Length: 139
Image (cartoon, rainbow, N blue to C red; front, side, top):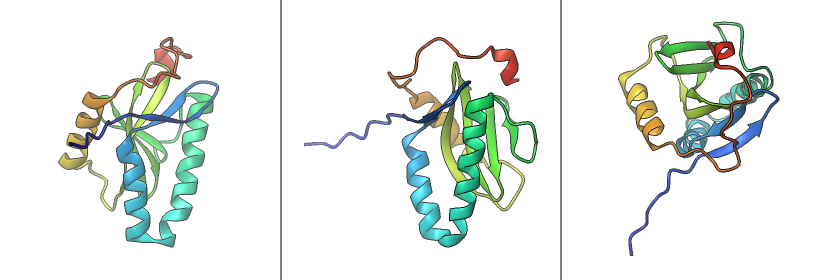
């Protein structure tokens, strides 16, 4: 018998404007970060959680210190040095994975991981297909 890992995303929380969806890699990287950085990562994860909830409620984060487009179509929510990389889908922000970064530049490995996760993305059934906010607000 062969084990097949389904790359099924899950809705972490929903706000007034967006759903925040985590790919399975995001959960894995959270555990890896905690094992590698210990207590240091806890406060950064709490800050990241607050930023993602604010993004879900308002549909945007204003400060480039907190949110910016890293490469066309891919964004980073930044609780420095922790970053959540992801992209927008209608009505949601999908978190691909988390990275503990010491440099400003997006690595090729992170680009590949985001592209692979975006290709594997399957919209969770609990998210309606209709977007809650106009796309112009996201840009």
